[in-house]
Amino acid sequence: MKLLNSFLSFETNWNDYGAGRFQESLINFCKKIVEALQNKQLEIYPTGRNSIQMEYEKDNGSYIEFEVFNESKIDMLEVRNSEKKKEDTLTRIEDIVNCVNQFFG
Image 1 (cartoon, rainbow, N blue to C red):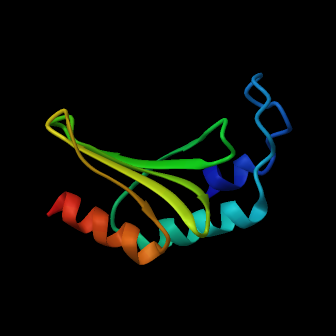
Image 2: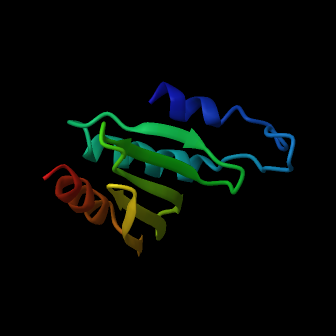
């Protein structure tokens, strides 16, 4: 949660490529996602597209990532064994939880 809160202090152009400030509503929504996935530690990154990327990676190179733009637009990409398995746009936290549960089996 501290990491997500730190994104609120980013000034305009924080990445030297014109990225904007992060909205508090986006950060709060991402906190809800983290809480819903409480049993699994996410890697979390700010992006220059004013979104937050959240991901899991396995030792075998498989990964799943969610790029959260707002409460109704979450892009998901899943790669297993170096091959794209699934790409989708999600709209609910429950969808993220289901994808993560399937990813970890």
